[in-house]
Length: 77
Image (cartoon, rainbow, N blue to C red; front, top):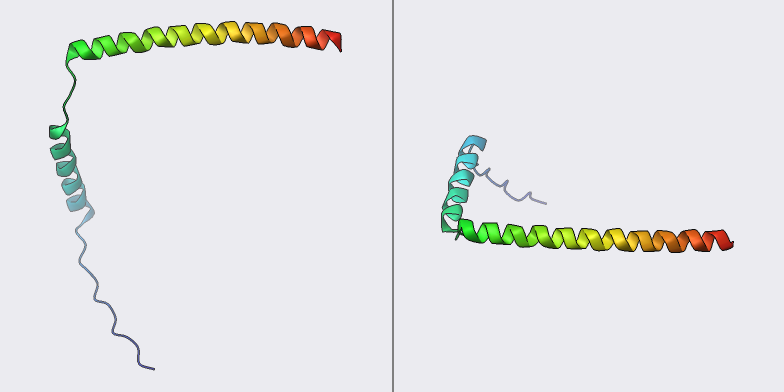
């Protein structure tokens, strides 16, 4: 059987050239991003922090309740 012809190697750009291309493409995409205004960032951050505090408090209360229940159940056994 005859061997198929060997594929010719494709010249790949150097790692530095690929890094430059990647950086320029990332920069082009980042220019397209619609960044939020400072006021919007502040209000979103405050909402996240308030909700974080509320969820933390809820978890703290549930943990205390479950701890009490487990201690009571283990004392019965």
